[in-house]
Length: 81
Image (cartoon, rainbow, N blue to C red; front, side, top):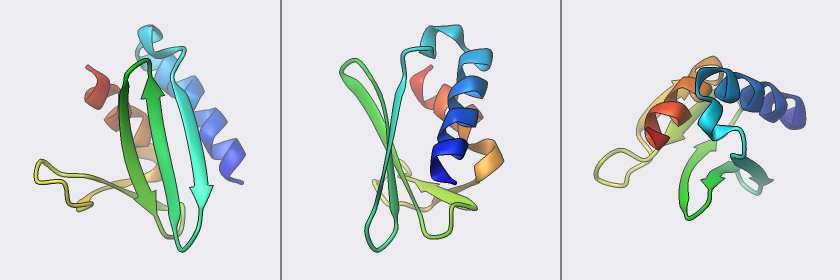
């Protein structure tokens, strides 16, 4: 399931911003899902408990910026803009 989600995000991210076509998304599962979005030396991360909502760090570094799964591609594009 997570592999399908990541593939759909990569396609949508590339559609929204072709400069991000080489973006690498990795997902690891422990107590929760941890995702990293990397392009060159720049990276961002998110966490999720259920793959329905993803929390990105806010400006203070707390994972309180919640985004539904469907909104992740747009948020990632904003983060790399």
